Length: 450
Image 1 (cartoon, one colour):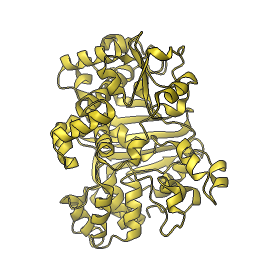
Image 2 (image 1 turned 60 degrees about the vertical axis):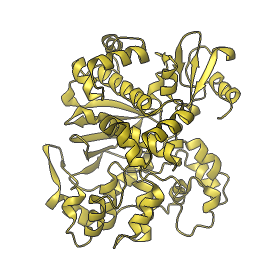
Image 3 (image 1 turned 180 degrees about the vertical axis):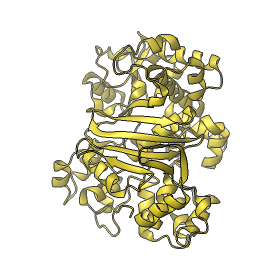
Image 4 (image 1 turned 45 degrees about the vertical axis):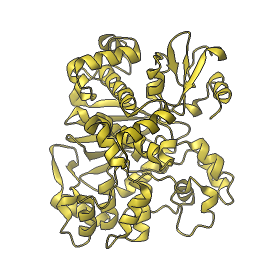
């Protein structure tokens, strides 16, 4: 989708496959939309295209009220790309700019702030501050329309530095005041809830979603006290605890799909963690994947065509807690459960069978099996954050005593979200690129923890 005429064809046909891949703005109305917007298709000469919502906002366009372009899935490109732009986008999604500023982002990437600003602006039409601002605006809209929190609290929970900045951003992005945006929710699906009930979410995805297979995997891997899958197949709910930058959280996601989203609910001890929690859920459930691109490549590969046709929307799940996943991979399921019971951090308030958060690496540095990896994670010798260089991380993992090549590959696939980790020795790996991890799922050869 590099050609504007091709993009316009997608807009004319309201093709939802490209929601989140690009945005279009209408100069005569001053709004920007997702490609599948149901409004009357504007004339070609009045349309401009942008790679990100932040770029459209930076050119003075406001979000469409009908299609809500800020609620689309993220671009699958950021999962595939291992360069500085892809790594930066994953880190911005995780809230790094809100917590550490642009210098913190640049430091994690190993570049100067000027280099990061230049590369993002040149390719995405917006720098890290503008990209983070667009994300904060979406978080603020979500809180305004789903909770009864005071506007002042929402401003800081969404990551804004001041109420004035919050008000100005909401007016610029949505052309409404925060109060008007809240009133727009009405009494339907967006009705406000008490904070104690959690923040209800619709986690958008593109294309078909094989939820049953994802929930089967999560149920098989679940560690008591920190995870559970309840309910009958087809109507299950996955629940788990999270350790977040400012506090802890408990999240639940329903298997029954809304067609283009998964229903979820997030309970947080500190609302500033909402953006990060949502991003981690999206990585866990692989919601930004492009199943059309995966099917096109793998469906043409020898030995996979029948599987791809029979099982549309297969995903390659990631993880919500990369360091936890790495330690569990080394420990195994039984020892992981014992570790949680002995060394896990208790929740302030238990939530059903969920009572603990998995222990931090520093807690396990003396463990006879996990100790070497725990020490490497605690001192930064191994980095598994969203912006980590995948090749460097795998090399560092292989240097840790007790981490086998198979374990390192699984950690790369799941904890680092690499979509191209093919089964060891697979002769077709080059044909599958960049979707080796999905090929492993179709072949039933993708390993799991425990």
